[in-house]
Length: 104
Image 1 (tube, rainbow, N blue to C red):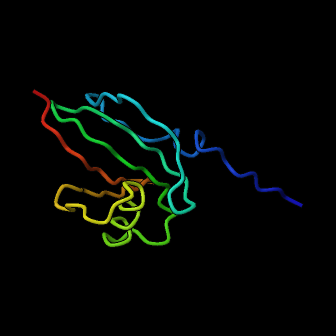
Image 2 (image 1 turned 60 degrees about the horizontal axis):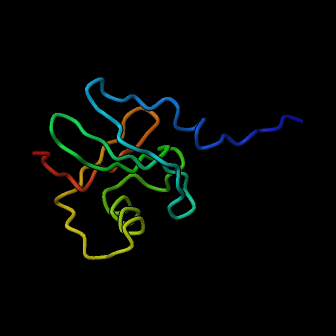
Image 3 (image 1 turned 90 degrees about the horizontal axis):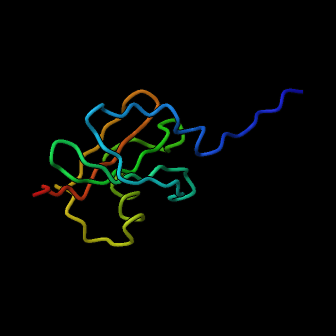
């Protein structure tokens, strides 16, 4: 009998490709809708933003509407300006980027 060991969040997210000029200010592992997620605050090229990163194969869907639902659950509010959100699936991960601010 082969046992499948479930990975810790740290193990699941240890292969995220971070751009060389991106500075991760902080991160933590959370669950949204029962799904493991890595939450990050970062700076890149004078822009501050936040990301929710999921293992793509753990998501029910990767369409924009479902990702908006996950972001709404994280922010605990419904009236979000989704024009301020970008999404990307890359390799094993799906990213929701939001709360962009130009750093002065």
